[in-house]
Amino acid sequence: EHRVLEGGVELALLAPLPARAESPFGIPAFAAGTSGVALQLGFARPTATGGFHNFVAAGPEAGLQGLTYLWDTVAVGGELDFALFGKKRITVPGKPFIDANGSGSAVSLLGIGRVNLMQARSWSPYVLGGAGYHHIQAKIVAASNEPNGQLCIIGTTTCAEAFSFNLKDKGLALTAGGGIE
Image (cartoon, rainbow, N blue to C red; front, side):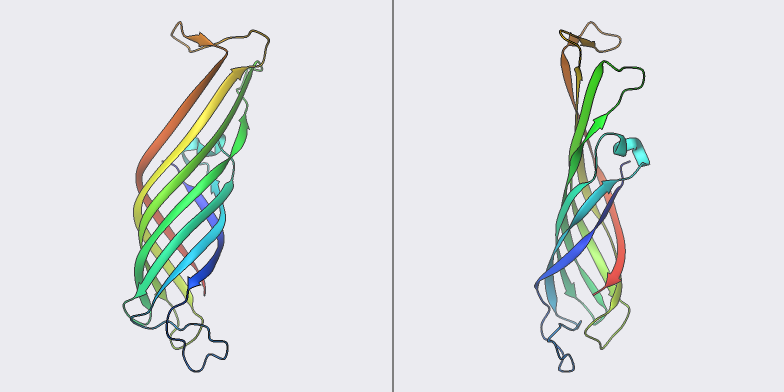
């Protein structure tokens, strides 16, 4: 199990239609039948669950979210997210002759629901949640830092100056959040 914390800002690409007359700035209102698309930009940081944070560092995250309001306060839609985790130097306890680093990426596709907590306003606090699919991967490279040094895989006769490992996981993705729009 791997968990990722995501944070950032949303930029409205296509504002819901129409804006209510009482909104002096033309800020879109939340009304049944309106739809919108948002670009999300931020960061993703691996959590300690499953040890993924031992191999990769925080990095940029981008997402695309689309919602359609079924009622004035309830919307459903989907979200596609991509995170590129930064490179992290890994230390191997008791093995000072090994240099290792890791990097990774993740993609998720989610169905989401959103509930606005206020009506008849051009702004609203909201909560959202959803579920879907994720695919996460990390690449770890380990190399000897000694001239002509060799690393060997324990229990085998396989030795080399460097090894590359690709770790992959896929499965259920869950999301939850809240904010003010």
